[in-house]
Length: 309
Image 1: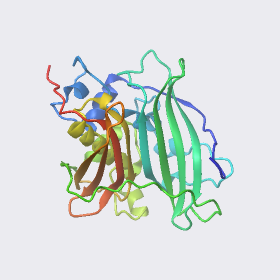
Image 2: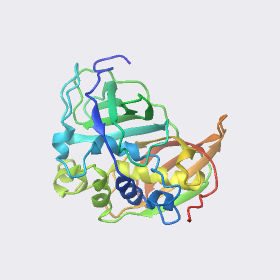
Image 3: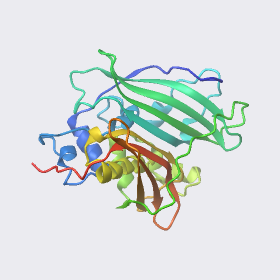
């Protein structure tokens, strides 16, 4: 890590969740009735969906709605300009799963530890801030997940910072997808998903989206990202959260409410010593643009899980 801002550590903050939060999340990302272990708290194999921790930096310990803009006005990064968080979009997200997540944080002390990996000046288009976030049991020091993400601060570049390293790309293979999943969003999809704790007005009220040139509200990038994780795990990992080791994708273009999403997935094989194979995927709007690129997951491939009691 080199360059202005690199290595800067944000203040830690506590996070918490209940079984009810896991049920809401699983419902909001497309889990279905044949996956009761994600949707029914009394199922003998009840489990958190693997990517749930991605929502915790938004949720903190809250059970009530919060002022998103006030929460987002985080500690300024030393050595770089102060950026306007009202004009930031997700760039790319990668999540690594290190320990199984308990179905509730009750009785435990979890926290998020965050630091800056790099701040990259892309000129007139904007600035990219890349960060690492660890979900840690404060009492034991055990790390449950490691997330690497980037935020793109629209129109906030040109301050003389480094351009940053060349991105690593994972293009889809040239052959036809091994499987395709289709999901029809609705006008209410983002309004449901935001109840997980991501209350950005951009995904509810038309005014922010109009100001940013989208013409109205757009669906959370992490809505599509988490739906893709569900599609991949169900198609290749038997809907077993233990079968997902890494998951990542890059946000390429916005999704509008009521768009139909097409998830194309490829199995590349090449299992490691623990049996995890590389899956690549893209997500596109039917008849429109690709919305998630650089999709890559490491999955221990199985048949579809049997989730009946």
